[in-house]
Structures are given as C-alpha cells and as structure tokens.
Amino acid sequence: MEAGYQVVRETEFDELLTELTGSILRGDELISDVEGILARDPHGGYPIAENVWCFEKRDGGSDPLLIAYTFNEARREVYLLRIRRSPDDVAAL
Image (cartoon, rainbow, N blue to C red; front, side, top):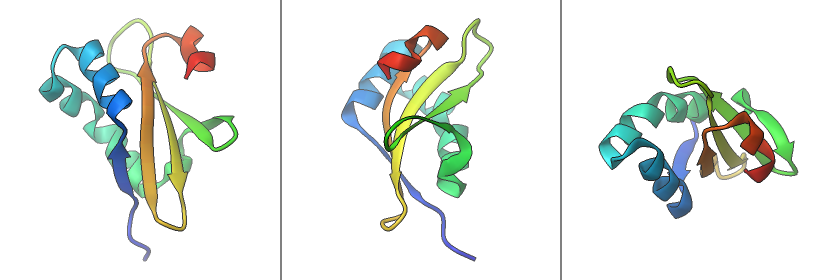
C-alpha cells in the first residue's frame, strides 16, 4: 500500500483560515479532517482550474467552506492554497 500525501498549508491559507475562524486553534480543529481526507486521496475534491482543485467542507454554516488546493503526485504532497466561505467565491479561489 502506498503512503499518503503530506499536506502543506500555504501562508495565505493559514491567514484566511484564522480570519474565518477567529483563532488558529479553531482553524486547526475545523480543517484537520479535510487534511486527513486529502492526505489519503487528493482527488477527493473537484477541479476548478488547471492544476487547482476545490474541496467543500460543511461545518454547520449556511454556506460550505471552499478549500482550493493543488497536489504533486510525484512528491506526494498536497498544498492548501486558499479558503473561502461562499459558493459564489469558487471563481475567486
């Protein structure tokens, strides 16, 4: 069985996550399951641009969290790029 992917958060992602949740600890709690899913299978989202994918996370809010990411199969890494709250923001990811 192949090893999973390493998940890397870009600086902008962490800043946006903290802005959305109010604290880095809350952000970590909110996103940890997404990181686990993408570490096992980065194809769990859907493509939104060339080499950019989107994963939707429902957290009880009125709109899902939209997480933009990319991955490198050769290096077995997933890079979390940006996060937004509104489905209208998919194009902005």
